[in-house]
Length: 374
Ligand SMILES: [Zn+2]
Image (cartoon, rainbow, N blue to C red; front, side):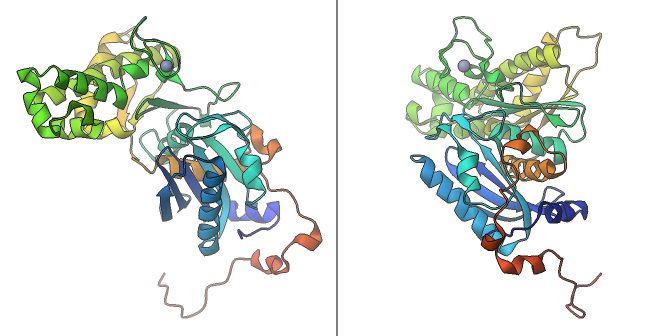
């Protein structure tokens, strides 16, 4: 079982600057867990496929990872980044498009099995926090994070605080209408931004081009296999990096839509930096340069204002894990609103507490001659 102790013992670990925490990123395909230090470095990591069919199986996977990692490291807190809409008390996953969660009281269920301070947040919020703390948005005043995966995820950090909105739903800018009566979106509306600037948009357009059997599409089809329906986003990116002109154009189109949408966000939020992450960002400058051009061309007040920096995310797949771990550690010294709704584990009755714990509060002294050079 994870180590238990008093609230003050946990805080003492934070103050001495050496605390470790566990971050868990629950995506549609994998559960990634890791022990993260105060500089955002991953000390140890575990990964397994997400049992997406069943909330109970996901819960088991989380508990299993926490038990394994906390048996090998002295950790102070656990943060979970979940691919779903998390309420503002950071305890209930309202809905997850890729997992079986529907109004799932994830924190309450986990708190019965994990005796450590526990925080649940949206995975894109966790990723944004990692970029703000240790990555491309480090120390910025207003940071917008855009995660380009199958759709568009988002996170917003203002003056060192993750902004969640009143009900925890802020940052869903992938569903701002960009094209009235445009492509249908999973959210039920038409013309959402993510239908034009995301991995899904890239794949849809590449397949449409390939199906025309135009001579233009010939080299693209040759590079990705002859069946248009099997084309994936990474295929198109790889073809573009290898210099295939149609693939380069397809990515430039996504980049252009991205830049236009960022200009809208800049009109509303006036950020210092916009960090672009997610799978599509692996295209690097093939995406960023067209995005920058479209952004500068459509930004309101252009020529008479400072422009936000557009930066590629520093962390790739690890951002959610690192951010979740750091959010949980951060909550111990600056408790979020949810601190009153179960961040700290419930106090156990004296007779239930393991007796050996009192001796574990103190950090072990280094053993003379243990071979650790200073
Ligand atoms: Zn939508």
